[in-house]
Image (cartoon, rainbow, N blue to C red):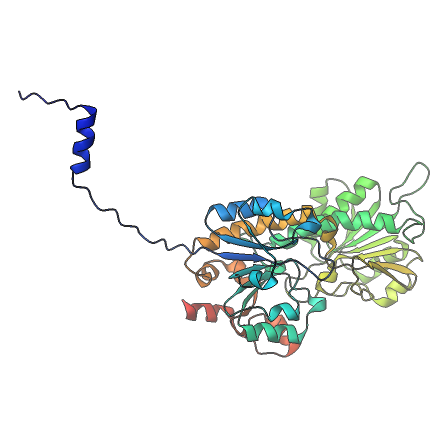
Length: 408
């Protein structure tokens, strides 16, 4: 039996260096790294930011480039250093941010900002219908960008995740806002929302039985108010009663029952969300005229035009107006009042989408495989793909499915 020769460590290392080895060739990755831009918001008293530092860290660690405009996170109490420390680039020139392949905003771009766009750029931002103009749509078409409306984005379950999470915030904030407006310092009737010993609670009417209504109801009941809920979907009324876990007055949108409750209401909260287009009008001006003097309307549906006929868009600087002796609060971005919480919520939804986009070779492939993302697209490379906007402004409509299929 042949004896095996033992090699010293020095000899072994020398021999191994002379052995033939297979050449290792670098295989280029098919994954597309994204260039993401986050500009500073300048309109609508917007305080939120689309990506918080922890999400930026996740994106940068997988190879994406993120550029943040100077001071973009300040109103949400995020400093420039919070972003630079996790790998984001801080830009002092707005044009640098708008050169990104994917631009994410929590307020719609202005007409001046649209001039900075470039073809095939992906824009992710809200689509505030009350502020929307024909010039806005035409300019986006001319720039040939892919514009995605946050509020019409769907998840795999068919729900609207951005709307849902903002609705949770809006529902709680609406009740807290109404409670303040009912007080003397808020201009109201001097009524405490919750009852005390010997004094009945304030009466609140909530229009809609979705997420806003659910969280508004939880907050109102927690403060001791009396709540009535109206919706035409009986399943939603049954669901909200089961989730709240206690008896509630619920009704379909019967005009007789609704007007009776409105006459006695201290607070009315509009919480109707339309799947596409404008929210329906549920309360007429004539009904508002019959409401108690000093009562309060908080129209959360103002993002989609409002569900109360007397509603007009207000701002955080001038949040209320009085019409027919009724206080109206109609701020579209109500969640911006708690911007740090809201920014984290939006970021949690957008980050997985951006990570998924980085796993594909191009945005068209992602849109083809993700029906929920397609639902949010309203302009695509020069074409208007939202049927409601087409009818509203009398512009040509093109089916997005046909456009994407032709590009694959």
